[in-house]
Length: 351
Image (cartoon, rainbow, N blue to C red; front, side):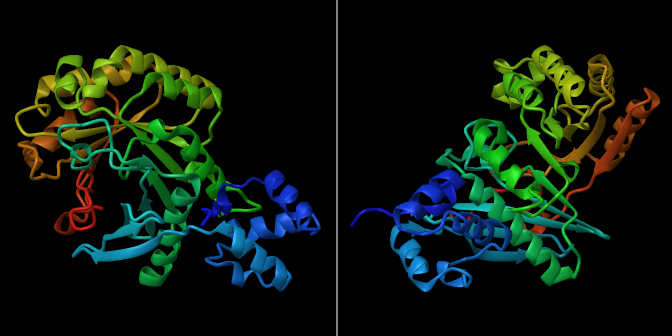
């Protein structure tokens, strides 16, 4: 039996051509697109303003590969971790992080990851494949609906900080974000409410600038000298701090979008006064008004790193603030269900 095409990979022009070949009017393409994205239909039978025969033809020739929530875990602090099963049986994870009136969705871009960061559970998995734009979009829609169901509050922010490196899935990630921000045929979000986090691929950061993206950028820094960063993030060997600094300057000059430095503090590794001084020098030398988020480390079985003590984090922050930098300490959420930063690994759901 011939494999049916995924209809959400068909563009408007391809749909119009298919409709004309079926003897249907081309305006039906817009109706179908609205059902797929804006109305987020899960089956062709839901498309009630289409003729029954057309719905049957669509079902016969196309698939509609919506992901599904296969597991939901709720933390003691209210954080919700979700396992999303994809059409091919692969699984990715997403997280809903409630904080007062703020509801943040953390979504994934790849099944697994190829970057092998030494402190991250996903980095110990193989990268099986990229997610497509519809799978990225579906995560945002699912978590949005769960925020309303569980907390009666709308989703306020989306961070591309889940499984995978977004800039190694560039086209699909940007198309997914375009769908999320599309006011006509998507969720209609402001791109300023979306942050993409990268481990640091200089040429792709420059490409973001050339493409004039409107969303915010976060760099997972975690060390402000190349020697230490090489130890924990092999990507740094081909993307030095100097090259990242130049790419970030270019990004800010072209877009004027917010940039954040994320810095996980590991005990006895990167949280001393000299490390803070190096981070301050790096941040100031970029020449851009970036902010710094210091993150608590969330231990994983595969790594030997330990969490820095709270008083060490406070001292680290004070050094940075004395240098005139904007600094926040982000306390871990969802630790008891392995939903915190760096812990997503499909422990119970891998294919």
